[in-house]
Length: 412
Figure 1 (cartoon, one colour):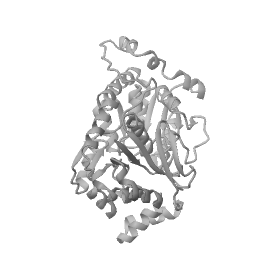
Figure 2 (cartoon, helix red, strand yellow):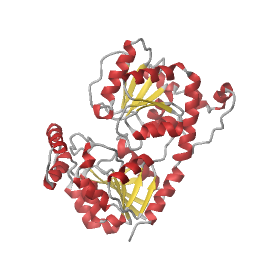
Figure 3 (cartoon, rainbow, N blue to C red):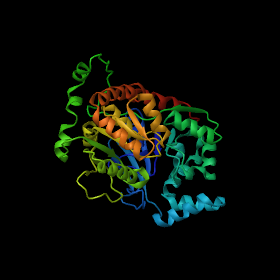
Figure 4 (cartoon, rainbow, N blue to C red):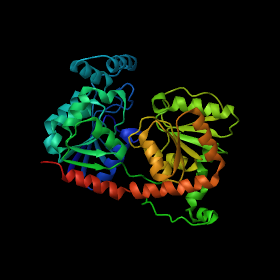
């Protein structure tokens, strides 16, 4: 089959979020189908400035067709307009203006879909929020799969999204929590649906193995592969991290909970905590110049997974998640997670896996951090639980089988 993925931006160096999720699925699907990615020339989601060259490209075995955005985003003006539209009565025209102000605004991509959608056997739209999906899904909804990556946020209450979800015919949900939220919020009449998520890659690039839990804790530790017992020695040495540390990975900005994370971690330090906080990814906010906050930068995929392996705890501070590959990849390498309880998806991962804790406020963050740092055996048990949870639910072969069923349900 010839499959087109539609996504707002795409690149090997874009890690985290729906863009990373889309790339992982597209790369796996390219081994079985003819895959193209239709996207914009933007690298930065704040401005949507055209940075990649327009036209065809080839990234990790996938053909990528980029189209130039017609405008950039003024983030201050957009935030002001968003505040108005979320709190006042408004018209359909106001919402369309909001969609255009949000960006990316790429008429050339939509023109390509209008002219060539019949040349593809299926279209897969990633994330509900942006104009390429809102305006593109309606071009050929019966031969389109929507991957919403949705959560409860002010924008999703706009009327244009009621129309989007009413149009959707085939949907790949990330989690049962996301599915319940969307189906109770919108009138969705679907021809086919699956709760899919995403597969999780390990450093060895091999299928996850089942680990039987030995009764003796010492024997359990010996049963782990050597790379898990080493706990990321290379990453620790490279970044001079010699003691226990919490790790966050992804976009480093207030919207992902990083500002609150640093505030809570500062309180932990003021109470005598000895651990360090390390952050990896794209820095979109100022970090305090203190020795116990380390910025590791934008890492390669291999080093990023080494970092997850090296961490004592991986913290997921975002209150808005539809899946959280950060949490799942941490579990896959046997590192317990500490999650924001305001995200129902993260809380459900913790409940289903027994591989992490979650916090509602500053005091709970400090208590959970101290508990996990103090109890080696608890972390090791959670690590085994997490690996088993990922093995049961996020194997690539199972993920691809679900996409095969969705593709088979598309109408020609």
